[in-house]
Image (tube, rainbow, N blue to C red; front, side, top):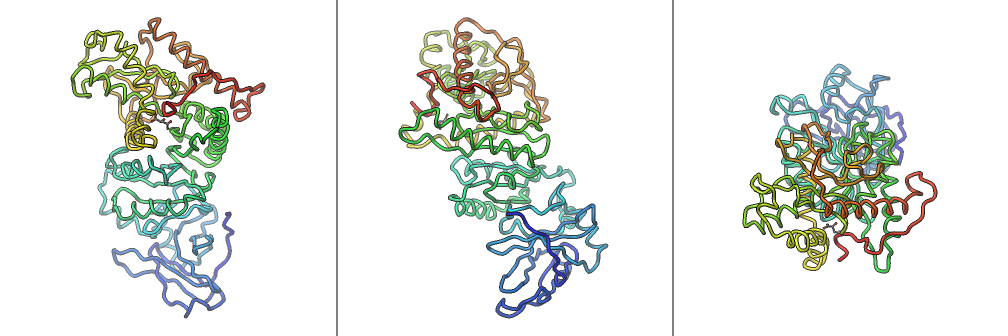
Length: 484
Ligand code: LMR
């Protein structure tokens, strides 16, 4: 819903802290002059303002300055609608000062069309005061968008993000939560729990159901929401159904996200969904798109540790090659246990090939059989791990797995796919592919099988990535880990 800017001469706001001076009785007074909002007096508490226009009670949600026109705007919102309103200013020097400091809508000079801030996160506060309290070392706020925000995975993840354990305890966070019309209430439930958690680093929570609104100015996009495969649904149908969601989200990222947004696709089939999002977002570097295979890496580390009779922090250098499906290749050849080749610690090659490998490939399905639903908590942990691997330097000699864009890769994997490969990072959000891992015949054949599967998936979604001559002919055994 686009918010039309309209003149509201009766509204006066001064400073960032505003409160109603008077309120017309019963909310039924007409005309914009019914209520005047004036500056709240100095106090540490934050105050929401409200006003009546006609029969509608509006709550002032945000205040910002249009840099070009030097006009001040606030967002007034009722339960049903949100309006950008040009506010007249009692003392513009105060406004200039405090708005410049607050960065309430960083980088934006527009209304946050259709995205609603939630509850306590709508409070217009004076960051100038907060600045004095917060540690001087806090970084510039990071905007993280999460799709499928009312789902199980997000329910575990959001609290990790807000607590500071993922991006760091000096990193203030804004969370933009994307849900669906159906999950609207649940989305508010999530936002309520975030409110009640009093996370000091969580500065904003905005909720909405339109990607083009929720993705605005995103620094990170965690694309979790996807449709599960329904009864009788062919995998090709699933690829198409979810592909359409990711094509739309790719377009939205392209239109409104930060140009250097990092995108992590979790919704299955995540490799091909990530490729679809990437192809629909030409403004964003292809390198910024990832598909989550960290969950598979974690599962592989656990199984190797179990077999070696060691705690899992002794296991390193584990690569997952290929697709997040049952063709994925958990690499025991280059893995290390206590710094030694895993194959020297676990000498039973038959176990590695015939038990370890399928166990990792089908772990998702084994878990669904127990739980009756897909993994959620461990997926959220692995999303956190995947992000931490990009925002912290990789320990020397180690690497991590991520589904990344293959063009120019050193392993001869076909260009133009999202394929899980060994990566390392300097901790700046970027990564490089680790070259020169040993590939024997066993690994080679399996890597090629996963590549073939991804090429076939790509053909199925040709219509969503601007390719011609698409047709869908997937290998018989193409399955997600959860489909066993
Ligand atoms: C997992 O690996 O746990 C999930 O991808 C399984 C699934 O199919 O949802």
